[in-house]
Length: 190
Image 1 (cartoon, helix red, strand yellow):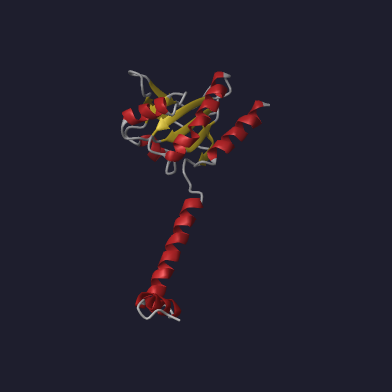
Image 2 (cartoon, one colour):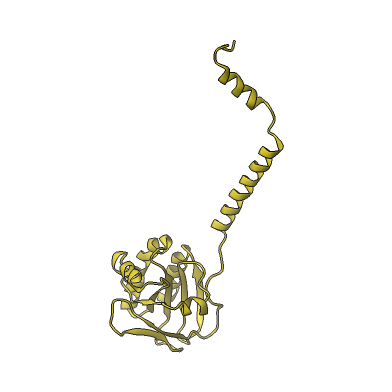
């Protein structure tokens, strides 16, 4: 038996027993479409980086934390080169920074060269990321965004592997890149 003094509970019970109006159904449908869309774009891999095969030529980029030092990719190389495009504000890049430590060891052993390229607008932010994450390899700064445009870097981090012939051999983007790169290193150790 309902309490005659408590009209709030009676009204709430009546509201839930009625069917939703057309406007409420439209709003519910829009909310579901939005949720599905966000999930779709969050988990669908996106293309980032250059096509495989073309020669990689990168203009000189300044190395952060140095005076006048820069790095250019002229074409043919002594060892394969792995480039990681990252930004200081990228959470996934920060979580992947441990990979740079693994790659620094491979670089010291002469298996490959490694270069991180910051797409930050501010070189100081790139230097802060290098020091605080830490990133144990050289960090070049793409101040003008030329590297990002030329190599179509749209997802961070993006990893680009350049072979000794100077051609792009492998491109991988996002957090899945770490396992891909470790597998590549293991393939080429033998």
